[in-house]
Length: 584
Image (cartoon, rainbow, N blue to C red; front, side):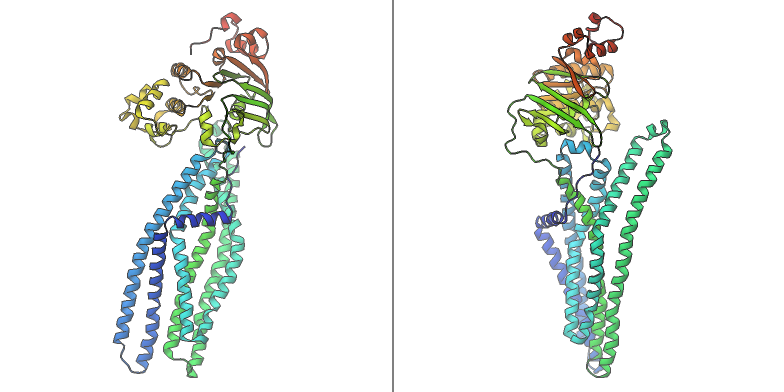
């Protein structure tokens, strides 16, 4: 049941952008001010050139005017370079905040969201989308604001030189506004579709890479290739759509930018013959309008980029949407876990858990057993708050487990499965995820509890770099179990958590966990029945239903489903011999 993460709307994106700017007002203001001064300095040279032309025509001196023009050019250069320096520092701070916020949001996602989202979607948002937004926020706001001021200054300057010629300059904004409105109505949905197609492509490639051996063994190469071709074609069609929009926008902008200087030359020639304008005025207006094309082009470049980055920003901001808010006053009263009339189905399927009623007493060791596909792991996820029942309730201390915030949930219930992950970093870093306040002594005790004595043999012990590829699955699982001890929940749900360990290490870890978890509630999803022999009670599931509940001896003596499972697990040995569980 994979789901894509939500997408923020335009208002949320605008608020997020303003929030980032407000966090560094001095940097943004300095960038804008320096660029504005540079734009004003750029207006001096064309005006002086017109004066120089008129002065030469009248036989006057131009030395002073030329010196001022050179000074204005130098001032523009210095202001532009310094503005670029200030703007780059501002932009890097903005990009740092975007990445930090994204990481915080990803780590705060509810377990239910993480369980069901498409990994390709999250990967694309955390890489491509962040890079696009970072570049845009770094450069777009100063560039658009400064270019807008430059365009306004230039049009006003043309009107001041000659109002009639200045009217020609209004043709450029009019044509560009018309083309832009056509583009903007279509751009955002097109870029959102492009982003979704990019996420689907990343998901497909990741799935193929992870399951390459399975695909080869089962002979699924042709089927997966056809599926990949369909995904690639969707991505290609989405990119062609945005390319078409740009191919219409840019020619319209170029034509709109070229028309005003041409009209000024034609009209200026007529007015010059009539003696209504000077040659210097015509030259100045042409130069101003020629320069008008540069800021307009800059605005349009970023206008196009903003559609792409706006879609990316909406996808990043969407990460804030699924985070569950803790229900008001939702503080569990006690540690009792209760399931009442629970039904659950995965999207598009029939119920895999049906009508389950179960009470787990504090401090109890409960084993959940049953044949493959009986719904054991699904029930574990429901008890851990990862999935929400379709019907019925699952509560801890009379509060629905699925309504608890992630932080509050971790204080009460932790689910440990066979699949674990280590982040890039040291062994200490990975352990501190469970309890950032833990000292090295406590970390060492947690490692000793799960039999991870190999950490002491590493070059830098707790400070050694760790990853799943360098440590291997058994050691990764041991570190995951150590994190459970550090998290210190009152209830631990073990879904065959030691399955990835070799038998000797698994037995040692299980013995250590038995001592560490003394006094806690332990729910063991038991695929290997020797776990059930040590439990206070055994819950037997079959076809999504709880069919038997009781102590091990009682259920063996009852001759029901559990007794059949027990005989199957131990082969043809007698019931009395079967009761002797393998050492833990």
